Length: 250
Ligand SMILES: NC(=O)c1ccc[n+]([C@@H]2O[C@H](COP(=O)([O-])OP(=O)(O)OC[C@H]3O[C@@H](n4cnc5c(N)ncnc54)[C@H](O)[C@@H]3O)[C@@H](O)[C@H]2O)c1
Image (cartoon, rainbow, N blue to C red; front, side, top):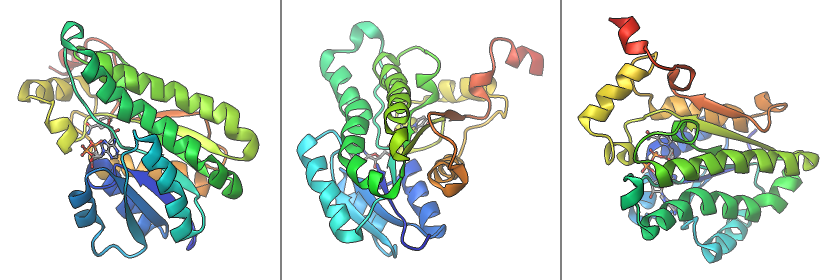
């Protein structure tokens, strides 16, 4: 394991940074990608076996420069974790095209671009891809016309990657987190929304960054060597339930 290399996007904080730390603890080397340079440098400081790469995953040019830079530094690539994401919520009629594009640029185009650029290196290692979607890609909800649609597309893109890349030994899977108290979520979750999630989730709470990272790290690992094309919710049971849970509780 000592020489295996993972690329994690959106690595400066939140679920991405938790994934970096867990994979380092498991013996991986990690290329940390983010477009927030100061946060990325701060996050990478003092981490042995990790290297920050400033990269906006929605920029074809920056992605095209970054993958060779990673290979130049580490010599190989065994896992790609497409975690970078943005959340902007609004009703359909108030979601202007600029907002729609900002969400699609990072959440969907970024996954496409980074993965496509990494395919030659992943073929060499028979590596794996883990895309981070969301429960908002599994179930529709209010205000998520752009965000939810981008995440549903990531789910389909994962299946597409698994179907096309399996013959090279490359696996592709998708993790759909439930709510986690990161900067992304707290910017769009009011107290009312937090209470509603607690009500609707069988485990009755938000998840933590590390609980999501554990699923990501498993899917990257050899323990998941026969798992591909799978969409796995790490969501406290949210997706499995329908109406009536709060009533049954009381
Ligand atoms: N937190 C939640 O409740 C939750 C729930 C479901 C899914 N998710 C998904 O998990 C992933 C991580 O979210 P988080 O909550 O840790 O968010 P976060 O905002 O804490 O971290 C996201 C990181 O991605 C980086 N980033 C954003 N756009 C980028 C781009 N174009 N290029 C490079 N870096 C970029 C940001 O700078 C930031 O460091 C996202 O894809 C998000 O949609 C989060």
